[in-house]
Image (cartoon, rainbow, N blue to C red; front, side, top):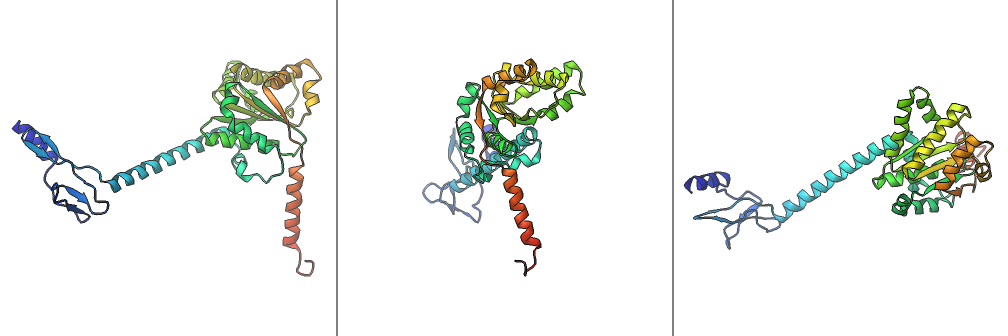
Length: 282
């Protein structure tokens, strides 16, 4: 017992209070002068009493805040890594609901998709964003991607031009692995379906990507400049195999309110004219 007491005495030696502490006369323990809660507790060990240190309330609160800040930084790093992996085009990072300028009312349906993500994922429900060039389909898709990534959902947003460039330099086995790797993501977004070349190889690989996603039973979002009629009545069997799977799993949403690119170009031109005009011209 004496050896144990000696060890305990070494672990918890008697100490004097620091500048921000005082000894409470009621129990003889050291207290924090700021929050007036103890920084020692009492433990009876046989015939010996030891007073190990404990955190007072303000120390505990400070530690909890530090831990929360650390966890927040870790989460921010994780989300940034997910964005770098899933949104490889840096400009897509700025396509968020917060940066929406209200050009398209369809954005509210995109927000609803994010809100109902659990149900969308469970039932493998995707979106087909279709409409004219420049109407904001890519923006809406990227808003969904960014919002879900912020919630910790893994998202990959890419297009078939990039996919086909990668696949063309691979052997068949590597191609299969590459295509299957897309299914690691909870949501796959394919931007600009229909602009890829219509070679036999290209159409086969486009089908393989869509079919792999179809069989994975995970949601897919597709944007396209094709009309819904063109998707429903394709010109040949090769396209029909692709579009049928897209239409089966993706709810069509027309994005055709106005040409955002033209609006942005007009605003830029007005700003430039104002910048370079003379005072007399103004």
